[in-house]
Amino acid sequence: MSAVLRVFADLDTGVDDAMALAYLLASPEAELVGVASTAGNVGAQRVCANNLALLELCGRPDIPVSLGSLVPLSIPLRTAEDTHGPAGLGYAALPAAHAGPTDYDAATAWVRAARAHPGELIGLATGPLTNLALALRAEPGLPGLLRRLVIMGGAFDYRGNTTPVSEWNIAVDPEAAAEVFAAWGAAVAGGHAGELPIVCGLNITERMALRPPYLAELAAAAGAPGIPSANPLIRVLSDALRFYFEFHDSVGEGYLAHVHDPFAAAVALDPGLVNTREATVDVELDGSLTRGMTVADWAGHWGRPPNARIAVDGPVQVFFDRFRDRVGPFAAGLAHS
Ligand code: RIB
Ligand code: CA
Image (tube, rainbow, N blue to C red; front, side, top):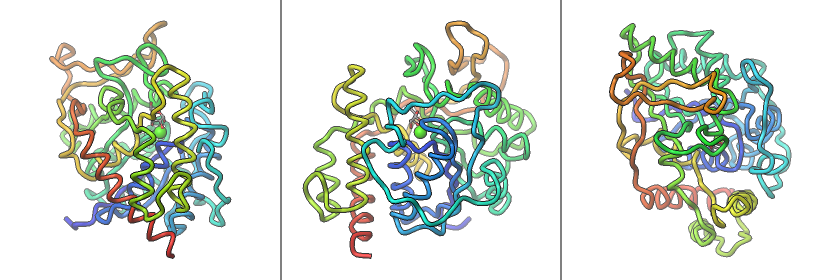
């Protein structure tokens, strides 16, 4: 198996999705082979435009970006402009990309990438699971084709952020999430699952609380100290995060940002970052109060094999140091390109 980690990222870009994208691009061991644009934080076309613009800003317009379904599998789309800003990147303003999306959709992109790199591709999903579910319908063998899957989603023995019990990526498309976990369960039962998906829920990602002084660290690491930074990528990330800070403050979390997605990206490249526990995960679809809840059967009450490895602990400072030490120099390189 090659030392290069080939990654396919499915994003609903989004402020923290943008950080995840930057982290992947800044990680020398990672080769980002494609990006899926999933409706969630904002509409799919806006997500796609954000992905294209960020890749161009980062000097990687060569990486293919695919547009996903405009709506969840079976319910209307809900978006979160209050959280991520009207265009999904807070106060950041990016020039539109010259490149456009692929002529095939996001689900097809998942399948093509997995088939092109059988047993090697690392999947990362940091948005609703709509397009991953559609990819699994097209290619039920996807669990056996992927080397690894890391999902940012759910909340395990922990409250939700969208309903009292549901986390955003699951709440936007609970049916898709249920299909994804069921597909891995079927693959496990059939003996062709490979590694179980690593699921980073709010129970761990809300520990990744980024506070304003960290932005100064990031700017300094990019050789452009001070906020607003003169570095183009740091400027975009800090302008995006400022909106995210204001949202978190408005809901009583404090002037900070829970950066869920770059943590999941770091785990995708280095699963040793987290301690995990196997469980059978399913998604409540019918509860009038609990719809969209990720339910973990830790003890085997359902008699179904585990279909996930739930991240239960991880080093906060190690993650933030790694993000700064990678994205800072990467951003510095852009300023001189
Ligand atoms: O609940 C947090 C998740 O929802 C993150 O992925 C954020 O970007 C939003 O998509
Ligand atoms: Ca996201």
